[in-house]
Image (cartoon, rainbow, N blue to C red; front, side, top):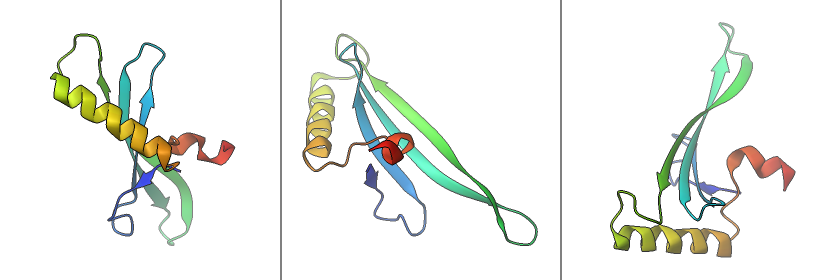
Length: 91
């Protein structure tokens, strides 16, 4: 599972950090949004995805930020909180 927001009951958002094959980190936030018809029935659920790439070689981030993202990745992995929300059902 991805890390749930502490406001998940108000705004269902999930966070994960992926390590790309190039060594860069990708921080992703997915907000789940359900769509209802006029009668109030769930038509479908959708997700709003937002990602940021942190380049580890060069890039815009200072060294301390790169280290912090690496530590965040390790902590999420340690507690099994780093599965991309789109891939949770396959785990």
